[in-house]
Image 1 (cartoon, rainbow, N blue to C red):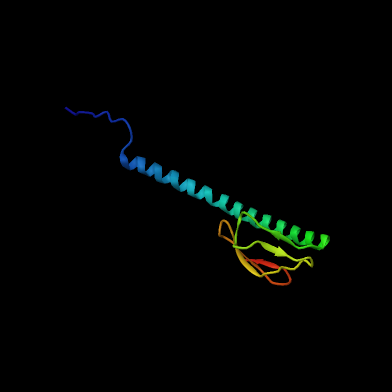
Image 2 (tube, rainbow, N blue to C red; image 1 turned 45 degrees about the vertical axis):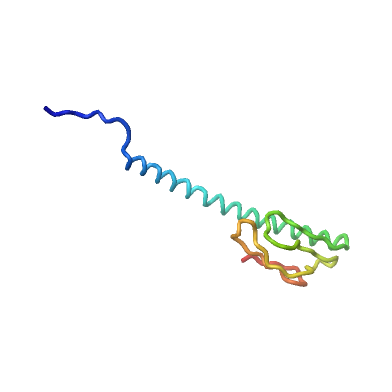
Length: 111
């Protein structure tokens, strides 16, 4: 006589396979979010830095910018002529972009 087993549920291999696929889908969906956040921080820095330079030029007074999403020991300071007082290399908080601020001209470059 053939004895039929009535197995209900999933085996360990099937459960691990489902967990692996779910982890893979989650990982792939989080990567674009990081890229969007990185671009957002880059755009925010560009806007705030340019606003600081314009403000310093219009009001003829030095101004400093201390951002929470920028990893730097010193704030970015601009004199009344719109030039940077100290050249700096700083990182955004997500550490994907490095910003180089050139002395004098105040121009910056993302790397």
